[in-house]
Length: 306
Image 1 (cartoon, rainbow, N blue to C red):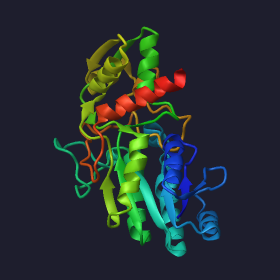
Image 2 (image 1 turned 60 degrees about the vertical axis):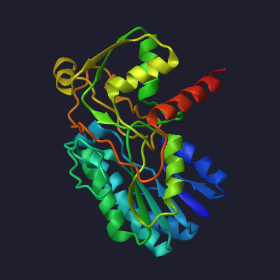
Image 3 (image 1 turned 120 degrees about the vertical axis):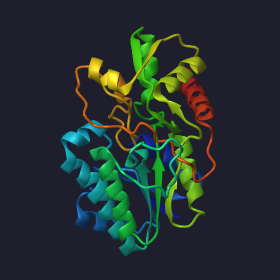
Image 4 (image 1 turned 45 degrees about the vertical axis):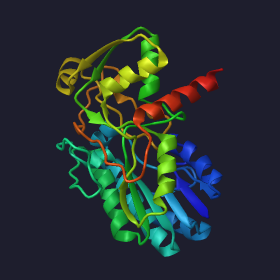
């Protein structure tokens, strides 16, 4: 099968492409340098010329707070870009896989979100990703929408690396303890997407199994690495009020230069996007527990350092 991947140079793309190749697929890697998804004609021409049997759409505007300041840019990429690909996929008779986010939910539930649950995004980022979902549903004939959460991987800056770096510097770490979700390893997400291909077209959830808070996630990172850290739990409200810092990362799927671990940014920044307090996803395919996935990530990370 010929597969075209958008955002192939990003954190998720760099893990997904070789995994798909190992599954026997011919992967065509694209990024903004050779495929501008915001240009409808260019996108259509590219897809019709290359004729992929499947398109895995990872490219996205993932800066949650930036989307509040640049809603038009975020919309052009997350919404209109997805629409352009959906229209092109229909003309080319290609299957489209669109990776979305837990941020399409408002976080008012206290049990894991089902794919069928009512969406209600509370940030511009979440709204543009939801509109991207709708564009796929309305314009593509063959599609999978795969929502994920709290993504991390070895090929991009992420919450784990930020926590370990700051702990090694001996800095005090104040991490929010009232946002709950499921950390997801890029490798597991890529494998989960492969599992979707045996299911009917539709919307699905793929994330690490189980749930945690950002604070407890940090605690588990330090415990597995044997690192002593000056770690303090804080509420979202107190963090914003006292520090003016960031709250939590967004899935960083296509830009390795973006810092997924927003909560570790300088307190000089005033962030304005709301995050869902609870965004655990009910998985649609079997997935590893997030602690086991974290263990694999850290073990592989250590092997690369040897």
